[in-house]
Each structure stands twice: as structure tokens, then as C-alpha cells.
Length: 214
Image (cartoon, rainbow, N blue to C red; front, side, top):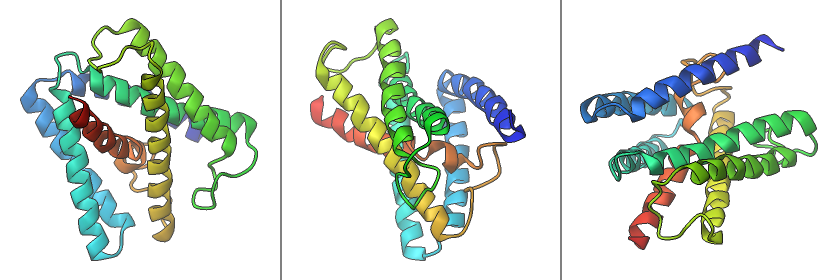
């Protein structure tokens, strides 16, 4: 097991603990931490977007995405929406990384050389597995359809796809700027943007979807 993989695993465990505390903290602490993450993400974005007009657009997008995060946090007392979306994105990340490493195969895109077709399918499969387990034990999802309806599985696959596209898009920005990671804050992972590149794209999509259906 490589040193980088050990760092990645340990950092992931710590991040999960911090995330659980973050999502279950009171409103004031939540807003403070969310604001800190937002400003760090904005700082990292400045490292990978060189054009001023694109950077401003990026800031506005991040602002809307974090606003969606804030709104989902207080939709219900159990954070069921956030857990659901985060689990889909985590499943996508884990599946893409694990299956891609095990099976390898043809490259998905030149933008991100480490992405493979096997990793893409692994991301879809793991997001379905992770979120299905969550839905089977949770009674707090307030979507207008049940877990037995195919629509929810279509939503999971769409969110997984958006998460992967977000990952690739941030990789594209980093490649254009000749940087490996958006930052160095998280050992084995890079910066904040390297960890939230999927969820920041999923949140606006699901928020709009939620507004149109309620």
C-alpha cells in the first residue's frame, strides 16, 4: 500500500467525522463553517481560473451552489436530502477510484488521464449501491416518489453522472492552469475543490429539480 493511499484513507476517515459534525451542528456553527469552506473554495478557484471574467462567473456559481447547500441543510431536521446527495457523490468517487484502479482499461477523456470507462461504470454502480442502502434504512426522504419507483434510481444515475462531469470539468481547469491539485489543504486529496468538485454541480441541479416538483 503506497504512502499516498494511506494518507488518502486516513484523510477520508477524518473528513467523514468532520462532515458528520458539520451537518449536525447548530445553525450558527454550520453557517460559520460553510462560509469558511466557501472562501477557501473561492481562493482555490483563483488558482485554477486565470481569466477574470471566467473567475467572476465561477465565484457566482460557487455562491449559488453553497446557497443550495444551505437551503438543503434546513429542509428537514434529519439532513436527509444532504445525506442522500452526499452519499451519491461519495459512492461515485469511491466507485470510480476503486474500479478504475482494479480494472483500468481505455481512458475516458484526455482532460483527466486517470479517468477510465471502467471507473465511470464503477461510479454509477457504487452510487446506486450506496444510495440504495441509505434509502432502505432511512425513512426521512421526502421526495414525491418512493424508493420503489424507477424515477429515484434515474435521479441517482443522473446525479452520479453530473458528479463525474463536475470532477472532469475541475480537472480540465486544473490542466489548463498546469496545476495538479486545486490546493494542498487535505493530505492525499489536494484542496477543498478537489473533494467537492462533484457535489457543487449536483446541488444546483437537485435544488432546481426540488423547486419544480414541490
